[in-house]
Length: 304
Image 1 (cartoon, rainbow, N blue to C red):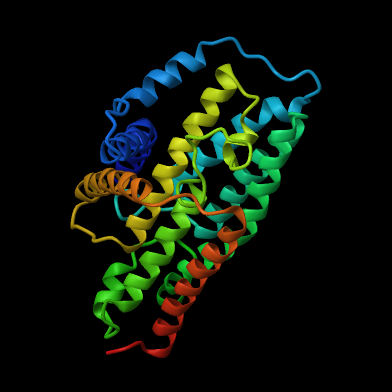
Image 2 (image 1 turned 120 degrees about the vertical axis):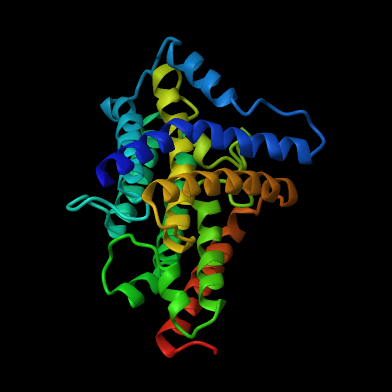
């Protein structure tokens, strides 16, 4: 049964990813006093973009053509590794370090695509994305520090039950959740770190790397953005969220949590302005520091 739960969970996470992004965009628009797009617009845009003619820059190479597919494949593997039902079948890979590696691989190919486009904006975006990646990865490691302390290994598993059995109170849980939430905004390229809705050359990061894409290549990149947001939010809930008795119930709960988190993301983006580029390292350092504090509290015994 666990195999069926894992497969269905992965398919639902991938299939509903554009819906979750649509919910975030709609909530953001409504809170800003605009009607905003339909929550289903992501599906229409993907279908329309996929069937458009695909062209490539004159001086680009095979790297430009291959990058969207590799990035999308890496994100699909991440979605499949997350134990949506609370646990995974025997021998099913679900190593957290592998998730970090695949996120870095996706970012690496995104940067290559930006540089290979031979455009000024592409190189600018590639530089910014890879530079911020050096701050995102330590923050991710720090936020997951309590997982390795409590479990002694790097497999993805729920930690909330372990924290409940300890005498640490809710402080380490809250700090780890806050650290990871800050990292999610940076990793997904959302406000206040990046703004996917703008094409201003002075502020573009992720969008600058895919600016030259169109047709099927652009559709793959857009789908990858949606899957990445869904996967990293779902990973956080699997790690620190409540667990129910049934894998099917856990699967349903995870999808509802991602949906609510997407709406919360829209609220955050409607309340905060984009940080200046040179302020983002401070933001990531704060996220890493909060995660390290949660790690320290678990190691030292915490505050009872």
